[in-house]
Image 1: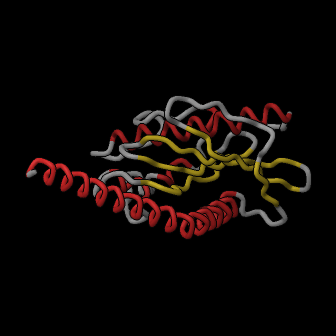
Image 2: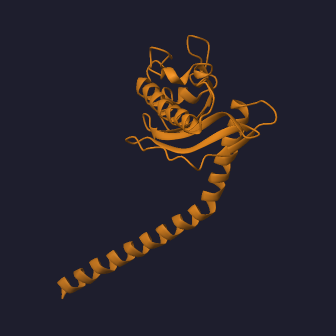
Image 3: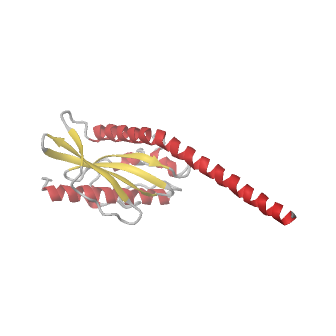
Length: 202
């Protein structure tokens, strides 16, 4: 009799835990339905603001590239690509790239037709506070006087980026620095491929 009671208690406990799990999942799904559109809207605003910073010339329009599929390279993905246009003429482009850093990061990198970097923005960075997050810290300056992300502006993406060779890594955050260079290289490589596909004059 005691064994049956114990068995029923275990079953009852299992059913209660299962019910809690179902309710928790339902609540998470509900919260996601409310927050996902807002997150997407905020991301769109960030991209739009960044594109205007990358290409401040008046009279330009920005479009999402839909006729080019970037290859997936390991854990790095090119989420979106954009062009800056003057009328029908492409004057530059940008790539939104995600991948592993010390944790995870998403950047937006802009370049002109000739490969000159016009800017770099972090849309997301979840690396460790104190070191990795310095990559996205506007108050942190490298020995060259620039922010980590600001040092890429004006450099030519065709040369590629290697930490310690043509850009300064963050002391104590080598993994983040090298990972960001991989994201930049992948993004700019695909923008340049798109320019080449479209016969954009360099």
